[in-house]
Length: 291
Ligand SMILES: [Zn+2]
Ligand SMILES: [Zn+2]
Image (cartoon, rainbow, N blue to C red):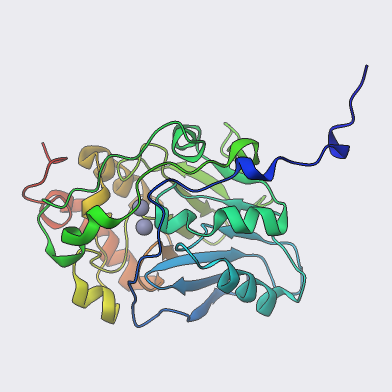
């Protein structure tokens, strides 16, 4: 007997956040602002984290990269409809990784849009309720944000059969010009997205353009090409190799998970400096994941 899968309503109740999911009252000067980095690359800041829309507004075919902070689903839907028209929805959501500030609205968005989610296979345990991220390291060298990081959610969300592994061949569903690049260190299945045609890079948290462990710099969004956020990064050696891998691509423009987009000379020089001096600039002097 053949069953018609399309006819079976999805068990929506299977999708949920982790037990410790909560709104985090953090903000920055860029919160609520968006910038068209390229005609088909839009970066919008939700409190302290960026989401990215890939696609031209007149195409109406686009992809959302990352899913914002807890409680931001309505904001994200508005951002999408402002850019692509009312009732528009992405063809897919691609995740750079599964930290709470990159999946904060994903359950509502997946239900609202009924779209698939893609992530690296090594990130799937954190997206399907199987594994928690290690506790954020409040003891790590560096400032106030690290100190409050134990309040950040780290328990896994459950996306069930809505989340799929990215294809092994490096292609990205619905983004034919992009390739995904494994950039582990910050998390095991962290990825970045790169477009060879114009060297556009969506870096996630492999590197960021604001010192995420400095409250002052997060608030003011002062540009400083920096390593991944310290309190969450669990493998500094892998994080260093990932930055070197991205620097070797000579990106022309980069949208990172935190901080303003950067381009040209500022990106080239900042990223080269970070890659060459990673241990001095990025790796904390002390912390529980530093060896
Ligand atoms: Zn992260
Ligand atoms: Zn992040």
